[in-house]
Image 1 (cartoon, rainbow, N blue to C red):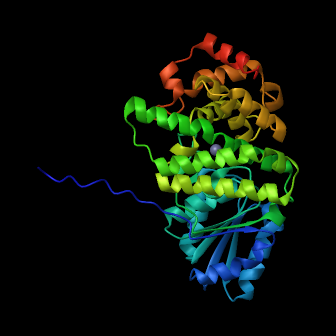
Image 2 (cartoon, rainbow, N blue to C red):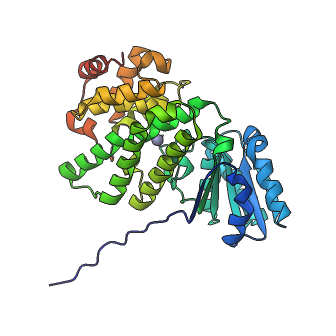
Length: 354
Ligand SMILES: [Zn+2]
C-alpha cells in the first residue's frame, strides 16, 4: 500500500488583534513589537486620512519611523498597481490600510503582491474585509474577491468607528448574518459534489452569525458594547476565511445575489445590506426560518426588501436569475434548484422582498 501524503493546508492568521476605545494609541507599540521599527507606508482615503491616517502617521513618527502616505479614492487594479510602485520605491517595513472597505482592500492586495506585511486599521465596520485574507478590487474579470494575505495585525478603535454613520455598522451586521446561508451552501457542496468542508472554519462563521443575531437589540442601540460584538464577529469571519483558505465559510448564494445586483446596476445600497436581503431569500430556499432572518434585520433597521435597497422589483428577479452564473465553481443551493424567471419571482414574493 502506498502512503499518500495529505495535501498541505496553509493557514495565515493575524498575530495581534486589538479592539476597543482608543486602541489607535497602541499602533506604535504593536508596530515595534512586530519588528517594524524603521519605516511604514500608510494607504488611506482623503476622509480616512483625516479621521485616523494622520494620527497613525504622527504616532509612528514619534517612535522614529519614517512614514510615507499614499491616498487612494477607489479600489481598482490601477490603484493597486500605483501602490505597488510606491512600495517598490520606498521598500517600507509594513503597509497600513486605514479606512473602510476600499482602502484596506488596496493596501492588502498591493502589500501581498510585494510580500510586505499589512496592518488593518478599520474606520468602519461595514464588512468582513477588515480582517479577511481577501480583497475585492474592480478591474479583474471576476466581480468577487481574490486571495491576498491576512493582516498581521488588526487595530480596531471603537471610538473612531463610532463616528461613522451607524448605517455602516448595520451593513456589517448584514454581512455577518449572511454566514448563516453561506455555511449551509458549503455543507450542501460537501454533500452534493464532495467539496472540501472545514468544520472549524464553518463553525466559527456560523457562530459569528448567531451572536450578531442574538445581540441585535444591543447593536441597534448604537452602543459601544454592540459595536464590539459586531467587530469581534467580523474579525472571527475574517479568521474563518484564513482557516479555510477561501471565502467559502463567509460567502454563498446570498453573496452571489449581491454580486449579481452589483453587475445589473450600481445601487446606493451597501454590500452588507444587499447580502442581508439575499440571506432572507436563500434561507427560504434552504427551507430554514427566513422570517427569523428578516425580523432580525428589521430589528436592526437594515433593509429587508427591494424598496429599502432602492431598487426595482425587476432588478431583484434578474439578480436572482443571474446569481448562479456569477461564480460557476461555487456550488450553492442555486445550482441545486436551478431557478427560472418564474420561480425567482415567486421566491422574492414569498419572502416579501418584492
Ligand atoms: Zn461579504
